Image (cartoon, rainbow, N blue to C red; front, side, top):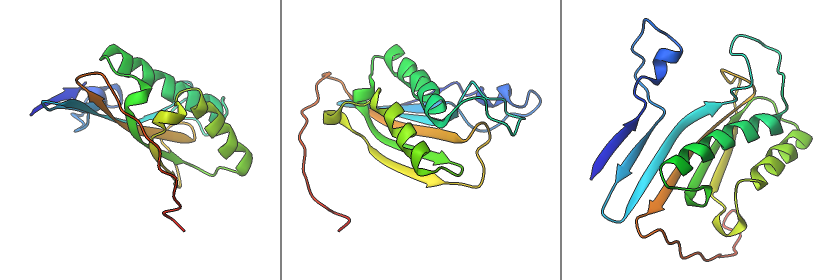
Length: 154
């Protein structure tokens, strides 16, 4: 197996004088697939040191997923390869929850919907939402998809 670290100097964007121990993500290569882990990202449209927000939850979601999609495309992957999404958000009401999911609909096809978790947190560093994701990219470029309908949470 091979491990590639994506932008190991990512933390220098935050602290020029500190070697922060994180990267933008990691790619694991096996004989059959690439597994991509992208670190949590916040909206580039928000100011890290402001408590007021210039954009809505939907706009922040779109900004974050657009940048993640762009990176995936640069490495030969797509949003169809995303298998897991984690969303961390500050207070979110029902309308904002719907707005977040309407924004996500632009990025994910039903046959490739990823597993997803949404967690409410006290604070997000920038804006009100942070998203990380995992993707698995088959080396043969093909996904065989299927759907199982069950209420596992019964």
